[in-house]
Length: 313
Ligand code: ADP
Image (cartoon, rainbow, N blue to C red; front, side, top):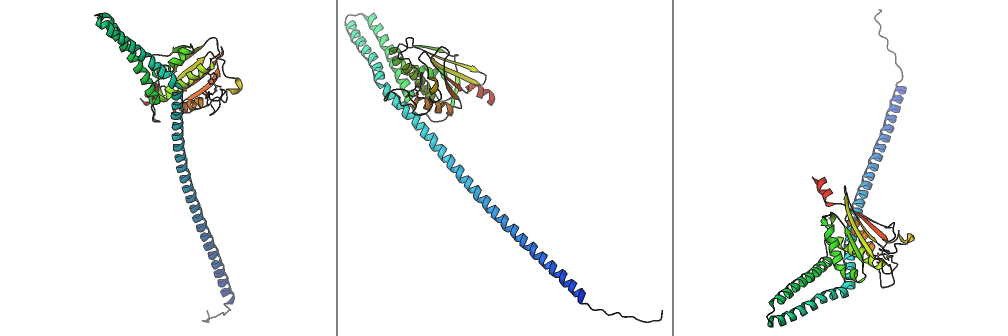
Protein backbone atom coordinates (compact mmCIF):
# COMPACT_ATOMS: atom_id res chain seq x y z
CA UNK A 1 0.00 0.00 0.00
CA UNK A 2 2.97 2.26 0.65
CA UNK A 3 4.28 1.82 -2.93
CA UNK A 4 7.47 -0.10 -2.01
CA UNK A 5 9.08 -2.75 -4.09
CA UNK A 6 10.71 -5.50 -2.04
CA UNK A 7 13.40 -7.61 -3.64
CA UNK A 8 14.57 -10.74 -1.82
CA UNK A 9 17.85 -12.07 -3.18
CA UNK A 10 18.94 -15.61 -2.45
CA UNK A 11 21.73 -17.91 -3.67
CA UNK A 12 20.91 -20.15 -6.79
CA UNK A 13 23.53 -22.75 -5.91
CA UNK A 14 21.13 -25.31 -4.33
CA UNK A 15 18.85 -25.06 -7.40
CA UNK A 16 21.77 -25.48 -9.78
CA UNK A 17 22.91 -28.45 -7.74
CA UNK A 18 19.47 -29.99 -7.91
CA UNK A 19 19.30 -29.41 -11.66
CA UNK A 20 22.75 -30.93 -12.06
CA UNK A 21 21.77 -33.92 -9.93
CA UNK A 22 18.60 -34.39 -11.96
CA UNK A 23 20.54 -34.12 -15.23
CA UNK A 24 23.17 -36.53 -14.02
CA UNK A 25 20.46 -38.98 -12.93
CA UNK A 26 18.72 -38.62 -16.27
CA UNK A 27 22.02 -39.15 -18.11
CA UNK A 28 22.83 -42.26 -16.09
CA UNK A 29 19.32 -43.65 -16.54
CA UNK A 30 19.47 -42.93 -20.26
CA UNK A 31 22.87 -44.58 -20.57
CA UNK A 32 21.61 -47.60 -18.62
CA UNK A 33 18.53 -47.79 -20.85
CA UNK A 34 20.68 -47.48 -23.96
CA UNK A 35 22.99 -50.21 -22.71
CA UNK A 36 20.02 -52.45 -21.90
CA UNK A 37 18.52 -51.83 -25.34
CA UNK A 38 21.84 -52.56 -26.99
CA UNK A 39 22.12 -55.72 -24.94
CA UNK A 40 18.61 -56.84 -25.89
CA UNK A 41 19.30 -56.08 -29.53
CA UNK A 42 22.53 -58.06 -29.39
CA UNK A 43 20.84 -61.00 -27.71
CA UNK A 44 18.03 -60.98 -30.17
CA UNK A 45 20.48 -60.98 -33.02
CA UNK A 46 22.37 -63.87 -31.49
CA UNK A 47 19.11 -65.73 -30.91
CA UNK A 48 18.12 -65.14 -34.53
CA UNK A 49 21.49 -66.35 -35.70
CA UNK A 50 21.17 -69.43 -33.53
CA UNK A 51 17.64 -70.09 -34.80
CA UNK A 52 18.86 -69.70 -38.35
CA UNK A 53 21.70 -72.10 -37.67
CA UNK A 54 19.27 -74.59 -36.12
CA UNK A 55 16.94 -74.14 -39.05
CA UNK A 56 19.68 -74.88 -41.58
CA UNK A 57 20.99 -77.77 -39.46
CA UNK A 58 17.45 -79.19 -39.41
CA UNK A 59 17.11 -78.75 -43.16
CA UNK A 60 20.47 -80.47 -43.64
CA UNK A 61 19.40 -83.30 -41.34
CA UNK A 62 16.13 -83.71 -43.18
CA UNK A 63 17.95 -83.76 -46.48
CA UNK A 64 20.30 -86.45 -45.19
CA UNK A 65 17.42 -88.50 -43.76
CA UNK A 66 15.65 -88.33 -47.13
CA UNK A 67 18.88 -89.32 -48.86
CA UNK A 68 19.45 -92.26 -46.50
CA UNK A 69 15.82 -93.37 -46.78
CA UNK A 70 16.17 -93.40 -50.54
CA UNK A 71 19.40 -95.40 -50.25
CA UNK A 72 17.68 -97.80 -47.87
CA UNK A 73 14.73 -98.31 -50.20
CA UNK A 74 17.16 -98.91 -53.06
CA UNK A 75 19.21 -101.35 -50.98
CA UNK A 76 16.07 -103.17 -49.91
CA UNK A 77 14.79 -103.56 -53.45
CA UNK A 78 18.25 -104.77 -54.53
CA UNK A 79 18.09 -107.33 -51.73
CA UNK A 80 14.61 -108.44 -52.75
CA UNK A 81 15.82 -108.90 -56.31
CA UNK A 82 19.04 -110.66 -55.28
CA UNK A 83 17.24 -113.17 -53.08
CA UNK A 84 14.75 -113.83 -55.84
CA UNK A 85 17.52 -114.55 -58.30
CA UNK A 86 19.21 -116.81 -55.74
CA UNK A 87 15.93 -118.70 -55.33
CA UNK A 88 15.65 -118.93 -59.12
CA UNK A 89 19.13 -120.41 -59.19
CA UNK A 90 18.05 -123.05 -56.69
CA UNK A 91 14.94 -123.77 -58.72
CA UNK A 92 16.72 -123.89 -62.06
CA UNK A 93 17.42 -127.63 -62.01
CA UNK A 94 13.77 -128.40 -61.29
CA UNK A 95 12.59 -125.86 -63.84
CA UNK A 96 14.72 -127.18 -66.66
CA UNK A 97 13.39 -130.64 -65.85
CA UNK A 98 9.88 -129.24 -65.94
CA UNK A 99 10.53 -127.79 -69.40
CA UNK A 100 12.40 -130.84 -70.66
CA UNK A 101 9.59 -133.21 -69.81
CA UNK A 102 6.98 -131.63 -72.12
CA UNK A 103 9.69 -131.08 -74.74
CA UNK A 104 10.46 -134.79 -74.80
CA UNK A 105 6.75 -135.55 -74.94
CA UNK A 106 6.28 -133.14 -77.86
CA UNK A 107 9.14 -134.84 -79.63
CA UNK A 108 7.60 -138.30 -79.33
CA UNK A 109 4.09 -137.07 -80.17
CA UNK A 110 5.39 -135.49 -83.37
CA UNK A 111 7.52 -138.53 -84.28
CA UNK A 112 4.45 -140.74 -83.81
CA UNK A 113 2.31 -138.32 -85.75
CA UNK A 114 4.60 -138.63 -88.76
CA UNK A 115 4.38 -142.42 -88.69
CA UNK A 116 0.60 -142.30 -88.35
CA UNK A 117 0.36 -139.72 -91.12
CA UNK A 118 2.20 -142.13 -93.48
CA UNK A 119 -0.34 -144.81 -92.51
CA UNK A 120 -3.20 -142.43 -93.16
CA UNK A 121 -4.37 -142.48 -89.50
CA UNK A 122 -5.30 -138.79 -89.43
CA UNK A 123 -7.50 -139.27 -86.34
CA UNK A 124 -4.44 -140.12 -84.22
CA UNK A 125 -2.42 -137.36 -85.87
CA UNK A 126 -5.14 -134.92 -84.85
CA UNK A 127 -5.13 -136.02 -81.22
CA UNK A 128 -1.31 -135.91 -81.14
CA UNK A 129 -1.40 -132.36 -82.42
CA UNK A 130 -3.86 -131.30 -79.71
CA UNK A 131 -1.66 -132.96 -77.09
CA UNK A 132 1.29 -131.00 -78.48
CA UNK A 133 -0.79 -127.83 -78.27
CA UNK A 134 -1.59 -128.49 -74.60
CA UNK A 135 2.04 -129.21 -73.78
CA UNK A 136 3.20 -125.97 -75.36
CA UNK A 137 0.62 -124.03 -73.31
CA UNK A 138 1.96 -125.75 -70.19
CA UNK A 139 5.49 -124.69 -71.11
CA UNK A 140 4.32 -121.17 -71.86
CA UNK A 141 2.69 -121.07 -68.42
CA UNK A 142 5.92 -122.11 -66.69
CA UNK A 143 7.86 -119.51 -68.65
CA UNK A 144 5.27 -116.84 -67.84
CA UNK A 145 5.60 -117.60 -64.11
CA UNK A 146 9.34 -117.38 -64.42
CA UNK A 147 9.23 -114.11 -66.30
CA UNK A 148 6.91 -112.49 -63.80
CA UNK A 149 9.03 -113.72 -60.94
CA UNK A 150 12.35 -112.60 -62.35
CA UNK A 151 11.05 -109.17 -63.29
CA UNK A 152 12.37 -106.31 -61.22
CA UNK A 153 9.30 -104.53 -60.01
CA UNK A 154 9.32 -100.81 -59.25
CA UNK A 155 8.49 -99.97 -55.63
CA UNK A 156 5.15 -98.45 -56.63
CA UNK A 157 1.93 -100.09 -55.51
CA UNK A 158 -1.56 -100.67 -56.81
CA UNK A 159 -4.44 -103.16 -56.70
CA UNK A 160 -2.92 -106.66 -56.87
CA UNK A 161 -4.68 -110.00 -57.20
CA UNK A 162 -3.93 -112.37 -54.31
CA UNK A 163 -5.43 -115.26 -56.27
CA UNK A 164 -3.00 -114.73 -59.12
CA UNK A 165 0.03 -114.27 -56.84
CA UNK A 166 -0.73 -117.60 -55.12
CA UNK A 167 -1.40 -119.29 -58.46
CA UNK A 168 1.90 -118.08 -59.90
CA UNK A 169 3.82 -119.07 -56.77
CA UNK A 170 2.37 -122.56 -56.85
CA UNK A 171 3.11 -122.77 -60.56
CA UNK A 172 6.76 -122.05 -59.85
CA UNK A 173 6.95 -124.54 -56.99
CA UNK A 174 4.78 -127.23 -58.60
CA UNK A 175 7.64 -129.64 -59.05
CA UNK A 176 8.79 -129.37 -55.42
CA UNK A 177 5.18 -129.73 -54.26
CA UNK A 178 4.72 -132.87 -56.36
CA UNK A 179 8.04 -134.38 -55.37
CA UNK A 180 7.42 -133.85 -51.65
CA UNK A 181 3.82 -135.06 -52.12
CA UNK A 182 2.37 -132.00 -50.44
CA UNK A 183 -1.35 -131.50 -50.39
CA UNK A 184 -2.09 -127.82 -51.04
CA UNK A 185 -5.52 -126.41 -50.16
CA UNK A 186 -6.50 -122.90 -51.18
CA UNK A 187 -9.45 -121.20 -49.59
CA UNK A 188 -9.97 -117.76 -51.10
CA UNK A 189 -12.87 -115.62 -52.19
CA UNK A 190 -13.13 -115.45 -55.98
CA UNK A 191 -11.21 -112.26 -56.41
CA UNK A 192 -9.25 -111.01 -53.45
CA UNK A 193 -7.41 -107.82 -54.35
CA UNK A 194 -5.00 -105.96 -52.09
CA UNK A 195 -2.76 -102.93 -52.32
CA UNK A 196 0.72 -104.13 -53.27
CA UNK A 197 2.79 -105.34 -56.21
CA UNK A 198 2.26 -108.51 -58.22
CA UNK A 199 5.86 -109.74 -58.31
CA UNK A 200 6.57 -108.99 -54.66
CA UNK A 201 3.37 -110.67 -53.49
CA UNK A 202 4.25 -113.72 -55.57
CA UNK A 203 7.69 -113.71 -53.92
CA UNK A 204 6.05 -113.66 -50.48
CA UNK A 205 4.11 -116.83 -51.29
CA UNK A 206 7.09 -118.52 -53.00
CA UNK A 207 9.12 -118.00 -49.80
CA UNK A 208 6.34 -119.05 -47.40
CA UNK A 209 5.37 -122.16 -49.38
CA UNK A 210 9.04 -123.05 -49.93
CA UNK A 211 9.71 -122.81 -46.18
CA UNK A 212 6.65 -124.93 -45.43
CA UNK A 213 7.82 -127.64 -47.86
CA UNK A 214 11.28 -127.56 -46.21
CA UNK A 215 9.79 -127.79 -42.72
CA UNK A 216 7.55 -130.77 -43.54
CA UNK A 217 10.37 -132.91 -44.91
CA UNK A 218 10.09 -135.52 -42.17
CA UNK A 219 6.39 -135.12 -41.39
CA UNK A 220 4.09 -138.07 -42.03
CA UNK A 221 1.32 -135.80 -43.29
CA UNK A 222 2.35 -132.96 -45.56
CA UNK A 223 -0.29 -130.32 -46.13
CA UNK A 224 -0.32 -126.58 -46.73
CA UNK A 225 -3.43 -124.55 -46.34
CA UNK A 226 -3.60 -121.05 -47.75
CA UNK A 227 -6.62 -119.00 -46.90
CA UNK A 228 -7.65 -115.42 -47.33
CA UNK A 229 -10.59 -113.35 -46.31
CA UNK A 230 -11.64 -109.78 -46.50
CA UNK A 231 -12.79 -108.35 -43.18
CA UNK A 232 -13.94 -104.74 -43.38
CA UNK A 233 -10.82 -102.72 -44.08
CA UNK A 234 -8.35 -105.60 -43.75
CA UNK A 235 -7.43 -108.54 -45.94
CA UNK A 236 -6.17 -111.41 -43.80
CA UNK A 237 -4.10 -114.14 -45.45
CA UNK A 238 -2.80 -117.21 -43.63
CA UNK A 239 -0.38 -119.91 -44.68
CA UNK A 240 -0.48 -122.96 -42.39
CA UNK A 241 1.51 -126.15 -42.71
CA UNK A 242 1.45 -129.53 -41.01
CA UNK A 243 5.16 -129.52 -40.14
CA UNK A 244 6.78 -129.45 -36.69
CA UNK A 245 6.06 -125.72 -36.21
CA UNK A 246 8.48 -123.09 -34.94
CA UNK A 247 10.21 -123.59 -31.57
CA UNK A 248 8.69 -121.08 -29.10
CA UNK A 249 12.09 -119.51 -28.37
CA UNK A 250 12.56 -118.84 -32.12
CA UNK A 251 9.17 -117.23 -32.76
CA UNK A 252 10.54 -113.76 -32.00
CA UNK A 253 13.60 -114.16 -34.26
CA UNK A 254 12.32 -115.81 -37.45
CA UNK A 255 11.94 -112.45 -39.22
CA UNK A 256 15.47 -111.35 -38.30
CA UNK A 257 17.89 -111.24 -41.22
CA UNK A 258 20.28 -114.22 -41.24
CA UNK A 259 18.26 -116.15 -38.67
CA UNK A 260 18.12 -119.73 -39.84
CA UNK A 261 17.87 -123.16 -38.27
CA UNK A 262 18.70 -124.84 -41.56
CA UNK A 263 22.04 -126.45 -42.33
CA UNK A 264 24.83 -124.36 -43.78
CA UNK A 265 24.12 -123.97 -47.48
CA UNK A 266 20.46 -124.89 -47.11
CA UNK A 267 19.29 -121.52 -45.84
CA UNK A 268 20.63 -117.99 -45.66
CA UNK A 269 17.97 -116.82 -43.24
CA UNK A 270 16.88 -114.00 -45.54
CA UNK A 271 13.53 -115.28 -46.82
CA UNK A 272 11.32 -114.19 -43.95
CA UNK A 273 13.15 -110.90 -43.40
CA UNK A 274 12.57 -110.07 -47.07
CA UNK A 275 8.90 -110.98 -46.77
CA UNK A 276 8.70 -108.76 -43.71
CA UNK A 277 10.16 -105.84 -45.69
CA UNK A 278 7.79 -106.40 -48.63
CA UNK A 279 4.70 -106.55 -46.39
CA UNK A 280 5.88 -103.41 -44.59
CA UNK A 281 6.21 -101.69 -48.00
CA UNK A 282 2.59 -102.66 -48.69
CA UNK A 283 1.51 -100.99 -45.44
CA UNK A 284 0.66 -104.35 -43.85
CA UNK A 285 1.98 -106.66 -41.17
CA UNK A 286 3.05 -110.29 -40.82
CA UNK A 287 3.21 -112.49 -37.74
CA UNK A 288 4.34 -116.04 -37.09
CA UNK A 289 2.75 -118.47 -34.64
CA UNK A 290 2.06 -122.14 -34.24
CA UNK A 291 -1.31 -123.46 -35.34
CA UNK A 292 -3.48 -125.19 -32.70
CA UNK A 293 -2.96 -128.54 -34.45
CA UNK A 294 0.85 -128.03 -34.64
CA UNK A 295 2.62 -126.67 -37.70
CA UNK A 296 3.67 -123.13 -38.42
CA UNK A 297 1.13 -120.48 -39.29
CA UNK A 298 1.96 -117.13 -40.88
CA UNK A 299 -0.66 -114.44 -40.87
CA UNK A 300 -0.45 -111.47 -43.20
CA UNK A 301 -2.68 -108.44 -42.88
CA UNK A 302 -2.91 -106.21 -45.94
CA UNK A 303 -5.02 -103.33 -47.16
CA UNK A 304 -7.79 -104.57 -49.46
CA UNK A 305 -7.95 -102.64 -52.73
CA UNK A 306 -11.72 -102.24 -52.32
CA UNK A 307 -11.29 -100.44 -48.98
CA UNK A 308 -9.11 -97.75 -50.55
CA UNK A 309 -11.49 -97.39 -53.48
CA UNK A 310 -14.36 -96.88 -51.06
CA UNK A 311 -12.49 -94.41 -48.89
CA UNK A 312 -11.35 -92.56 -52.02
CA UNK A 313 -14.96 -92.39 -53.17
P1 ADP B 1 15.84 -119.78 -44.33
O1 ADP B 1 14.68 -120.44 -45.00
O2 ADP B 1 16.98 -119.48 -45.24
O3 ADP B 1 16.27 -120.44 -43.06
P2 ADP B 1 13.89 -117.79 -43.58
O4 ADP B 1 14.05 -116.37 -43.16
O5 ADP B 1 12.98 -118.07 -44.69
O6 ADP B 1 15.35 -118.33 -43.89
O7 ADP B 1 13.42 -118.63 -42.32
C1 ADP B 1 14.05 -118.46 -41.08
C2 ADP B 1 13.75 -119.62 -40.16
O8 ADP B 1 12.39 -119.62 -39.76
C3 ADP B 1 13.98 -121.00 -40.74
O9 ADP B 1 15.32 -121.39 -40.71
C4 ADP B 1 13.10 -121.86 -39.82
O10 ADP B 1 13.76 -122.10 -38.59
C5 ADP B 1 11.95 -120.92 -39.50
N1 ADP B 1 10.78 -121.23 -40.34
C6 ADP B 1 10.34 -120.55 -41.41
N2 ADP B 1 9.23 -121.09 -41.93
C7 ADP B 1 8.95 -122.17 -41.17
C8 ADP B 1 7.91 -123.17 -41.19
N3 ADP B 1 6.93 -123.16 -42.11
N4 ADP B 1 7.94 -124.13 -40.22
C9 ADP B 1 8.92 -124.14 -39.29
N5 ADP B 1 9.92 -123.24 -39.22
C10 ADP B 1 9.94 -122.26 -40.14
